Length: 190
Image (cartoon, rainbow, N blue to C red; front, top):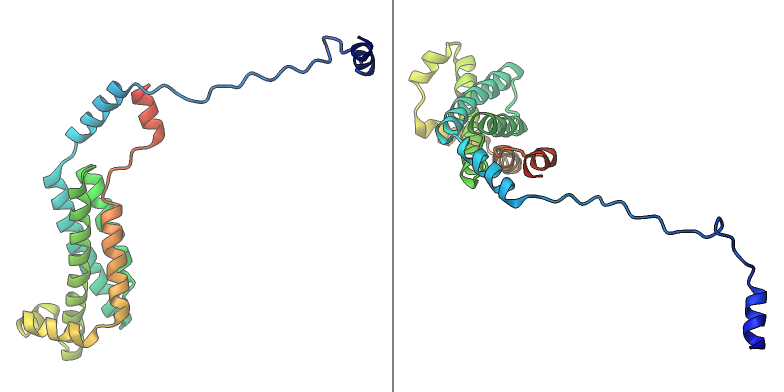
């Protein structure tokens, strides 16, 4: 008993004001209604538009290829990093018009990004040929066939082209998907 008295005497008495209460943890978790989330995702999937994604890919591929050629011919240089711009443009246009969430939309973006790069190089070759021959682009097209374009592309090929084409394909794939924010999910699933 004397030990208990000594221990209690050694410890000062605390008033109620001095007692520190652990703070109640605030709950930051949000209950997600999975049924509502599934309905929201199904509604988004219904908004997907494959024909519009393909149309966006085709149009953006052609427009970006023409831009590539115009810039290349006007500067006098075949600029490989134009492929990065082609990938971005194609990917975003497929996303905007296709509103896709499924993998097929990424594949569409990647394929048309690559096609845009190849066409950009081909159009630039035709533009360079037109400049060298002192003729218009339409006249230069009369002298060009697929085998000539393939041969010219092989001659002007650089290993760096593979890097830039790879980046364009990646961007075309990555940026082709509809982006759903956490806020949208919380808004529709809580």
